[in-house]
Length: 355
Image 1 (cartoon, rainbow, N blue to C red):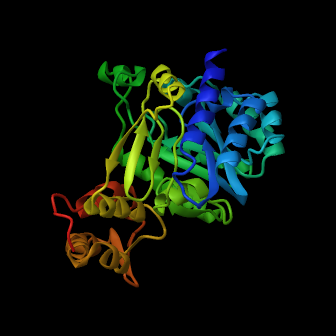
Image 2: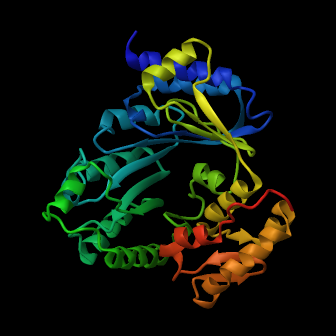
Image 3: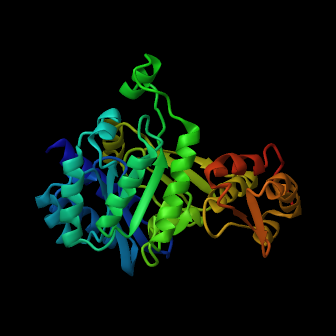
């Protein structure tokens, strides 16, 4: 049996082993991601989906997404996926310009990116693309052309992230040697604001810091995460959340398969404190259009938490980075680029879990 077949068997076995973890809740979304799920053929995908259906309650119309890069999504693969239960594609375009893709050491080129989207749009209505801003040497003009290129294909969802330079990468070495300039935070912020303005002008809703969707095309999978829904992660490195604890599977493929074959769940678990849950709610809530409800904080976590967040948020309200609307804290357009830092400043650390 091949390593891929071993992995598919282990995933199906883990699904059965964990079938009681979500209780009677219905599966609303399924997301194939975190690597290269496009290496799976239609039969392998269907085998996993059948295992989900056999062990869990399914909603009538679940969102079933597959994440892949243009070099993985051949025309044949896209056609095969369209004949499966997959109904949403998330494509890692990153840029439509070769110089950007080469700098980021991507396996695909600009032609691959456009051909992939062109074919995908023939077979799928619900498509999301990833774009990266803040790339060294990428002018604001080229960034605008990137956005306009995505819009030209009538893509209904765009996820966009600032470039992060990871250690031990070719880009990191180029920057250290002075061959490539470092990321310019000022330009990244300018490009982020350009992105917001251009997409909102075209009818997109900026519903989460890094995500823009036409009405009816928000990612149901990610929205569930941001709104604190339970989720079950299957396979190596996957994470799960049940409302009270988080767990994560071992990252090593061989160790993962070996444990599953021995009927052992290869995971570690952390029980979340009240402060952990509060901090998570603040972090995820501020990143969305739904914001952070002060009423919910008081009811769920107690008055010490609601008093703390009001006190900590005062300076951001005065600076115009946050707004308070009907007892809901929201990040303003001015504050969106700084949201993670703002949220961290509203966290409550080292407080005993009592109301």
